Image (tube, rainbow, N blue to C red):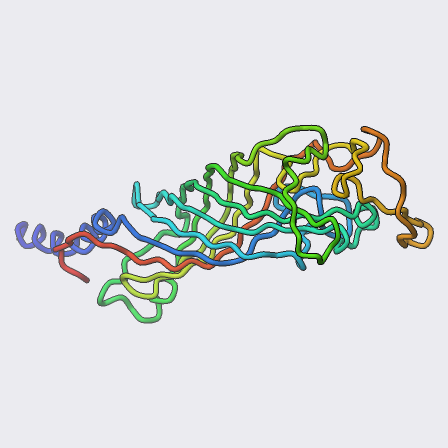
Length: 292
């Protein structure tokens, strides 16, 4: 009788042992992502004063631009994965598209190609599950869904440009002009936090949604950070005169004196938001334990 009990327990435990170890043979995936980015810096923005961190209030939806990303995903533990990646994005913002009258009067704009190399760690608070052969169909949809929180970082390349006259399609590099009499490089660091969802299509393919905010170590992604310098080069000072009583732009003013007016806010570095759809392909190693 005792042997029969032990044998029954062993049979019942085999599926659990199989699934518990299965993740070790499904550690590696490759993936590609595509989506949009939103710049959160000094230029452009929404109808109110600048907001920071995860606020959506300051997003200028007109200037959302594309982002693509490729990388690998490797499970360190059953519920913890690391994702090294390379990303490309184009960031863009224009004060004239803002609903904020003060920003429109500043009248600056920029764009930059941005490259990232980094990695993020993902902890799955809704765990990934193996879809057994005999899983009840009513639960399969829920079992295919997992969710995670992410944290990571890396390095980025940027090179802000602007047009002296909007629409002439002659974009000039702003960094060599030193519009605020301060040198800044083309490389910076970033730190990202985010949330993600993942849905299994089958045992090899999955699709996901990832939203992350990227905080950078520079305030010059848009070439604007602090004060005007009195430079008359067509790029440093384009401000307009505002009739605040009637909420309209009236005229172009003479240049601001050196350091007398705020060209940007140096209290916060620039940031940007990525929202991407991801397709995963799992690369399995040999796994010979039975399926259930």
